[in-house]
Image (cartoon, rainbow, N blue to C red; front, side, top):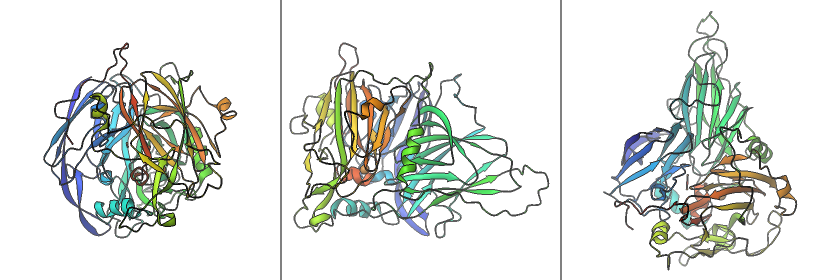
Length: 548
Ligand code: C2O
Ligand code: CU
């Protein structure tokens, strides 16, 4: 591979959307930020210069970061923030993966405006396992708030109630014609009949899973989270925050000058995030396929999308995603498991801090937790504390492998469940084969949580509604061609089982990719030890690693 250099200046920029101008944090003045393109095997050197009044870190979402954990980016997990005026060089190689990923800020809620696509092309002379597309087009979903970022964060984290919902969803930074005064802020995709296009769908929204569809066109899903899948057709794609999905779009023969609406709107199982709005863009045929082009106007055709709470669609769609599992692209599913974990994920409450009024149940503050532990962000980075053997006072290694008490997770919850707090991790020896069942709970309410794991891909070996049954469900696990991903939606009122091989030394964050739930504590970290005998050691930190 070659070395590719990028310079990311973090700067403020005035941007107008929904008829209002505000100053936002950007990379190089753009929203979405610059696209990173590399080939499998390339080294990336991304120099980030912080020229704003906020602390910043960037994360390369889905990049495996083999033995390069210092470049992963989550604030206070693998690095201290890049402070105003400081610079940090993210230095890593993209190996063993190709496809669509993205990058985003990984501190506070700054990823609301700091995000962009990250495309890893196959090695030179390697081809896609599907027809070569005529063009490749990133389509990034985002959210737009009229309020400034700090107001939004404070609302979500301090009053302890539901967060503000965004004022618009966006496609490539643009809300589209269904929002007020946004007709000119519309993403347009021009296509030629008979050609095939690869759409690289990325959900960079903060708090909403999205349904996406294009009127009168079916999409062929060919890749998820930068892993090829068995192609399947679907009119509608469901994509959670943190997920990426490549689809092929065939531009077919159409009447002259036909236009079609592409649209995305939330799939929401909790009440907080749903705001009943739709972002849209336009698919426009460049050349009429019929010769008698009289420039006649055709009505704009709109796609139909599932109901906002269509949990059945969500489950079915997720189950269609299967690894290629071929000789060239094998599914290396761990078969012999060394450690089993059962984590409940969900909402709960914590006491309201003094001198505040909280809006959660019983005047408490709403929290979110894994195995009832609501994660407390440390003041120094966990990876440094681990590497220099200074974990004392920073984190403890007693993250529970099972919930502290059993109950009917998807039935009526016990009254008064208060979460506990702590900065707890699980320590895994190098090359541990892990099985992890993630179980949604109905404390406060059932909700689908898009769980994201840093540093690894995992295999989605099983999922279902209700409570996981450890004596019956494992028999039905798919160990042949399960989806391999970095983010999976834990079904609302259900469970999902994943497996991964802990072959990457470092500290790896795992969290709900709904920003509001991350802020509320639905996060934890895995510490994977060096593979001394395998010569798989995490190298020492780079000299410019920011200090806290
Ligand atoms: Cu896309 Cu921890 O993040
Ligand atoms: Cu969540």
